[in-house]
Image 1 (cartoon, rainbow, N blue to C red):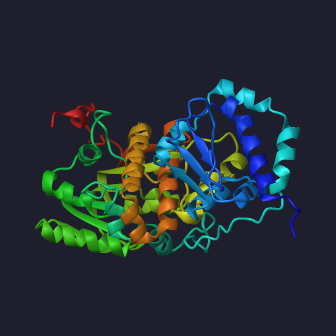
Image 2 (image 1 turned 120 degrees about the vertical axis):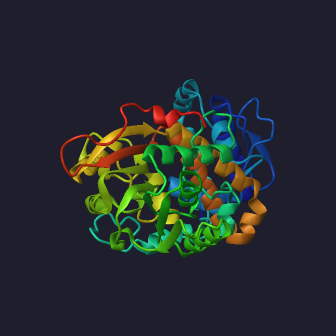
Length: 441
């Protein structure tokens, strides 16, 4: 049985906490308490951006376990709400100036502790989630593993759901903005062209796209560069969508797609692309993955690896530590995924017989792409909830907003690496300059 703190005592306590931190925070955000009262967190708070708390249990839950996962679970289950804007807007509104952070540290901790006592034994809000991956979420210690469950957990949410926020080509990797004011649609078209140019595609060549998604690249490469392209995926939903697209565009003689693990695929290709794929396989499997790509590529053939990366760490211990945001992604969004620094990726490629020609950062491009996705999904909230339910919708909005923030602040990155297979000595076959990448459309 909890201590006999009255409901009014709890309201008075949370109001005093909020008014105390409001001055140093000085945010254009307000908090709506469970009794309907609204407390501004800054002198300029205009009531547009409001954080809603469903009850005293929210405060109690955050006090007992003040983690990112607790906050996300409270948001996903509706106990914490963000009203008056999408999470991208809220993340910008919640940014605190460095000078204000110093003032926050000057607040009396004794006073804050005394005001939180009425919530110490408040009943914890129910935050049991229905949509989490219950098996091994990391898989990094497995040298050989079945990726099908991991891939299907994320990608088989439903094609209709992805269509709510992706472009018509269903590109679920970052766009390439030749101008920061370009639309998402234009950026994704420019991305497809840039990949094809980096691969130096020529009519009649055979191209393999590992983890081909909904078939956007294999269809684009065939239509605009005249190659014979083949895509492999582990997602049934993606396979069916891509197959229907190939038939609709009349590309059956040039483009094919199949459900197949990369390790089981057999074939020889002139060019191979891995777009947003290597993050899913685990670092322990990198040698196997890149060796397999090398074995399928002709001598002096070109491969492009497009992957999210993390910062390099100063020690193995630091590198093995899983940050709170990673734990959230592994449990609820991307089970089995693992990120590496770009330098580690290039080491693996060189050890697998590749010569590195080009490394380009697209971090800022992904920050803007994920911002577009979050805003589009938020704008289609009602339809998204109809398709996947409120809980999963909120988890995805939180994931996209967090990803945009991570790319913006540089805690996560995106690199494209272009390499050629070197079976012997001599010329690589690559041009002497990058002029071919930036030719006029």
